[in-house]
Amino acid sequence: MKEFIDDELLIYRGKDYNLAPGITIRQPTLNEICDYGERAYWNMIYTLTSTGADLKFQLDDMGIDYTTISDFTLFYSLLAPPYHSSKTNIITGDLELSDFELFQKNSSEEIVMYDSKRDILIDEQIYQKFAEILRNMHGLKRNAQIPANEATKQILIEDAREEYEHGKDKPYVSQLKNLVSAMVNCQGFKYNHSQVWDMKINAFLDSVKRISKIKNAEMLLQSGYSGFGINLKEIPNSQLNWLGELD
Image 1 (cartoon, rainbow, N blue to C red):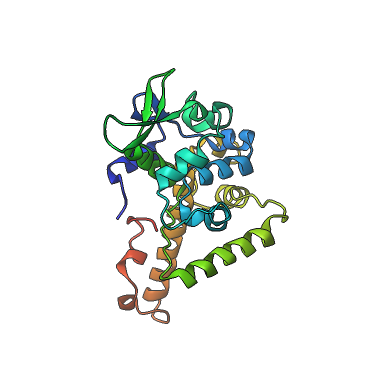
Image 2: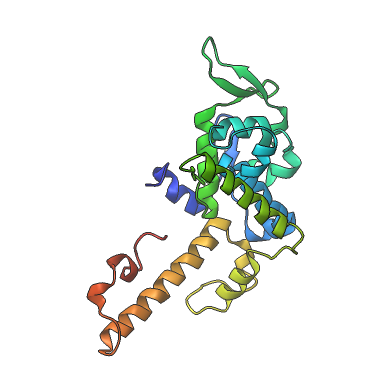
């Protein structure tokens, strides 16, 4: 079940999203992402939405158990401080994450981030929604991988380390180039090469998935009705209904 499902249409619409007082999430176009630098953009999005499971070996090297650190603790202690507005203004405007300090809320033990210059507060609930909106915007899912035992945890840590070492020197491969190329040359996509760059990132990624879903449904139906193909009774309705939810 998706969190914050009431925000899906707002995210698809692509307008600025007022998350909390002083915190607005804006959705960039493909053109803005290209000018920002695609690799740097995705690195920022992945970083700001990371969980402990995304940083297994890095946290282990710091003596931190990745299975016990909360997403919010990870965010305020390691992920947010390096990000000045010059790096994040493409999605958060003039919000200065590096200016936030940690405070204990009232007499409770709850830790919050607070920017006294602008009177902006980020607590755990606001961060969770911030991260979930960014994930929904970019078609990402929260990594909630939890190992069954200590031995498995150590294996996963070493696997993550090896994967990183194996791939760190490989040249960057664009995540968007092939998608843009495929869409502007795909029948049914309504934007040409000049127009596609003005699309917001969520609407574009949604179009990629939707057209793929439509084409898959058409292929299954054609095969099923041909009399020589598949048995449509054996195909889940979710694959035949191209109006349904996207995976």
